[in-house]
Length: 432
Image 1 (cartoon, rainbow, N blue to C red):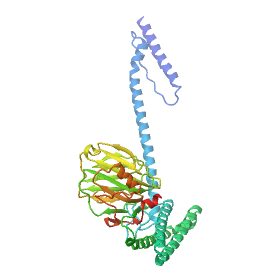
Image 2 (image 1 turned 135 degrees about the vertical axis):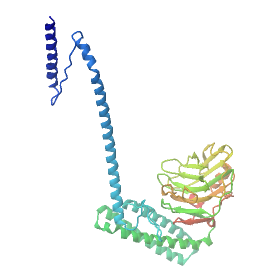
Image 3 (image 1 turned 60 degrees about the vertical axis):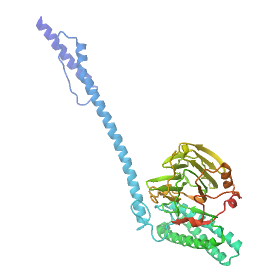
Image 4 (image 1 turned 120 degrees about the vertical axis):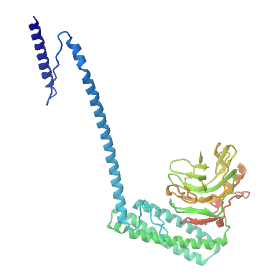
């Protein structure tokens, strides 16, 4: 009897092996057979469940390995994309260095040689170059129109002849720009001479800037010292104006100015005041896609100004150290207010006030991406909060309008650097 039972168990064992072999054929390829003996007094199903536990562990291990492989694959794809971007940038750098030998240095910034670089402070492609040329030419035209008005009112034969000569040169420059546009569109071989043409254009523009500046200097004795504007035509890190004197300690202030800009994104930094140990003591900035902000002791308040439409706008900001209360006015109308802006922190003295650039260090650390682009005039600072009526008088060019008692807009109060231009401006004439 015992022998019979053993025979039955042995045949069940062989049957299990044969069943596993026939089932494994569905998977194809090389297979392995695992045969497990079952004691005579144990249920076959229960034994199968017990033996499935190692299989669950194996399955979990396989899933973990699969997840690791997918993560590595994703990492490899990201690295490939980074390599493609770096390769593309390297190719552009090599092409630019090949096209302009001796004009580039690490970081992509152009050399600040003895001649003024009117095309900006970074290497640019043909399309960017043409855009900057157009902006510069437009700036020169506006200055010539100003000179023309002055010559008509003074009947100056010399000014007229110089104006005609400069107008002729600008017309020639416009023809060169048009020729370059045609060359780019038609893909002419003349593009090989782009570096030489660009050098000639920059040299001519530099000469024009200098001659117009000389003419404008000749007008200073015949106009009030506060009837002028500053123009920053390009987004660079070297065009700015420095106020000659520092600000005193202030427990309240009002700062007002006229601005005109169509720069995007952000008009940049109309002014910044830095003191030892704090570069953001008093800053007005509109950077990137952020709204315009005022910073006091590096604390920020967002201002509801919308001014980048290419038109003149008068803006004022008032502030008091008590509770840090501030108000913002555009074109004589109150647009917003708030509090808790650097409360009980007086504006510190012995700093540097810069127009057109944001200071990362005292008097320096300029970043071209934060530079102001546009026109600025009638910049005034008071050490008190002006009333709404006083601000309205400023915005409407009333004869009752006051000038700043801390800083008043005067040509003799500024030093100008980097090619920022200056000529006659009167806000009321622009409004009418």
